[in-house]
Amino acid sequence: MNIHEYQAKQILQKFGVPVLDGGVAYTADEAITVAKQLPGPVYVVKSQIHAGGRGKGTFKESEAGEKGGVRVVKSPAEVGENAKQMLGKTLVTHQTGPAGKEVKRVYIEAGCDIQRELYLAMLVDRATSRISVMASTEGGMDIEEVAAKTPEKIVTQSIDPASGISGFHCRNIAFALKLEGKQVGAFTKMLTALYKCFVDTDASMLEINPLVVTGDGQVIPLDCKMNFDDNALYRHKDIEEMRDESEEDPSEIEAAQHSLNYIKLDGSIGCMVNGAGLAMATMDIIKLYGGAPANFLDVGGGATKERVTAAFKIILSDPNVEGILVNIFGGIMRCDVIAEGVVAAAREVSLNVPLVVRLEGTNVELGKKIMSESGLPIIAADNLADAAEKVVKAVKEAK
Image (tube, rainbow, N blue to C red; front, side):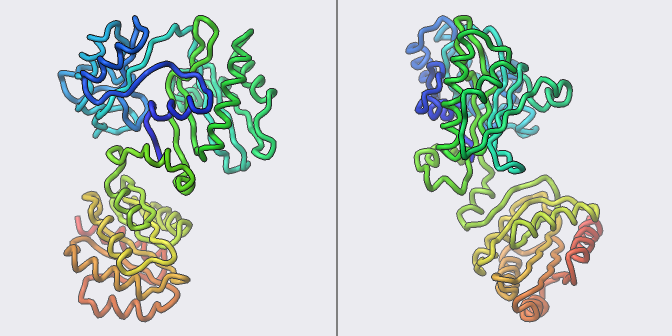
């Protein structure tokens, strides 16, 4: 689950991480009110969307011009004017894609005396089962660009969760970032608090870009992005309440309501599979045969006919889908249940794209019988390779 910058900073504050004063606003008048409560004379107006690159982004609407989604201004009146230009407009960044995202709220923050911009991030390293801290002196830039052009400027510190973070971890990173004097102490205190925040909230990623060193030696997160493990949200109701569904794909929201694991992708072949590993293999073999998956969809091991029907409808709600591949191994899941769900959904939505089904396992013969007697143009496949080849071929022939 992702949250907005202002929400991430609220969480950081609870763990003692220093952040600048600020407040969220949903209208231009609210933005002015927030600005008047800040010390000034410099204010920053920030568009709040779930995407990076806001400062370099552009608005689709001409009246907002090319100023970007983060702007520095010098009066409450200018805060209101710029908030008005942003709210309700569509901001396009390198992470949103050409469609962009509508700005429904802005964050008004106090300005500060920036001397240096750094990069800092924490994430779970699944290869080592440890938390990795990434840092770079090149703050304010996309870390991917830094990694491609100057990888030597990225330092990584691995932290064993059994022992936790220690002073030497913090000093190693501080010295790599060329911090000195009281900046090292301020950074150590901040990084220790960030680590506790990361662990205690079950975060999966925390990125601060930029982390700034101010004129008086403070080290402050100027921006913050946090992602959380969905499977741990039951332990964090306060964080779960921060979810902004307007920033999420409607199909993914609907899938979650049916206990389906669904992620929309850019391809044209819809996939319905039981089991995450089998779903990944299915997407890979579709690519191998020249197609592109339109989604990742795992119906789980104990799906009902109703859940399968819902999954089928979600796949077909994507206008980019030109064919569907159903790949089921009936272990816990019974093939006849899958077949009944597929047939029911296909009839209900008036299926108009090629459908290839590969079934194997419990009640497979009954499942095949249900589909063959349905009267629907379902293409049966003998194995996964056969299924991928047939769906890619059917999609090409249907064009």
